[in-house]
Image (cartoon, rainbow, N blue to C red; front, side):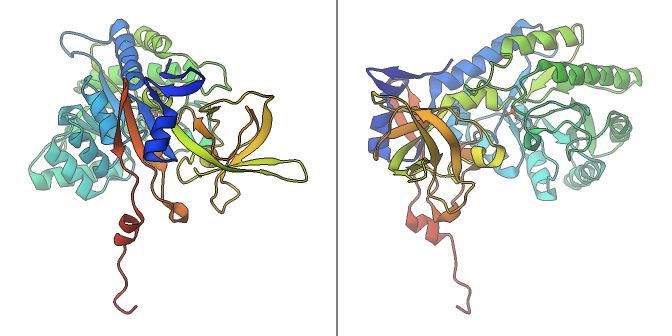
Length: 427
Ligand SMILES: *Cc1c(COP(=O)(O)O)cnc(C)c1O
C-alpha cells in the first residue's frame, strides 16, 4: 500500500495534490510520501519481530536501510527516527547517514572497493561492521586499523552462489559476480581474521541480488548461511551477527505481486529457528520504491505519419535511469486523467540517446502538452541515480507529510552547475 491516490479526479501524495507541487516547485520533481516510508519500515520491522528473530541477548534485528536506494538525508532521517540503521557503500553515504542521525553502531559498510581513506573514516566513526568482500580488502582493513590503533569489526560477505532471478545487472549472488567470497574461502578468512591484530570478526553477511520475487533462492542461500555460522562456531570461533542483506522485490504493477515482508520474515524465522545470534537486514527497494514518484510534464505529443505517437516529457533518462539501464517497468499515471479512450504512446525524454525511452507502446489516458504524469515506484534507485547528463539540472526532491510538503533538495541552478568547474590555466 502507498499514499498516492486519486482524490477528486487528481493524483495526490497523502494530502497534497501533485499538481500543486508541480506548480510551486516545477517539473520534473521527485515526490516522496513520509507515511509510505514509515509504513514500509514498520511493516518490515514488525514482520521480523513476529518471526522470532529478536532475543533478550541480542535485541531486535538491525534493519539497515540501503542508502544507495534513496540517499536523501530527509528520507534517511524519516527512517532513522523509527530506529532504522544504514547500509552504506561509500564515505559519502556514511556522512549522509550520520547527517540523518543514524547512530554509528547501526551503520553497516558494504562494497567491493573500499579505499584506505574510506576504511579509516569508517573506523574513526565507529560503524557496526565493515562487510569484507575479498582477501585483499581484509588485508587492507587490518593494515588501516593497526595504523589507527583500532580493531575493525568485520563481517565476511559470502557469495552463496545461487541464482536469484531478476535482471542480470542486479544479480549479485552467483559465483561469477564480483561480490563476496565462497563458503570455503570465508571459513579460511574468518579464522585468519580472528588472529589478526587489527581485526575483530563479528559475523557473516550475504546479499544475493535485488528485486527478488521468489523466496526459494533466498531460502537456499540463508540455509547455507546458517550452516556457515554453525561451522564457524563449531571451530570455536566467535560469531555474533548474521547479516542477510536486502533484495526483496516490490510490485511494479505489470508483474504478479512478489512475496511480502510477512512471507519473507516467516521463511527466515523457519530457517533460523533456534539460532542464537543478532540478525541484520539491508532492505532498500522494499522500503523506498513505492514511497516515491517522479512527476513530469508533457512537452508535446509528436504523432508521426508512420503511426507512432511519442509523448515527449521534460523528464529524461538522467532523472530516472532505471528504464534505460535495466529495462525497468514503471507504471505511469496521469496526474489529472482526462476522459476518453486510451491512446498508445512511446514515452520519451529530450536527451539525445535512443535509450532515453521510458517505455514503448504504453496505453494511457489521452495526454496533451502541459499535462502532468507520475512515474510510480520511483522512490528507490530514482533520484539516487540521477545525473546532469546533457547538462540538465539535477532533479529536485520533495518530501510530503500529511497536507504539508518540504523541498528537501532544491533544484540546482545553472550558476551552481557552472560554478563547479574551473578553467585550465592555459585557457
Ligand atoms: C543494493 C544493496 C542492498 C539493497 O538492495 P535492495 O534490493 O534495494 O533491497 C542491500 N545490501 C547490499 C550489500 C547492497 O549492495
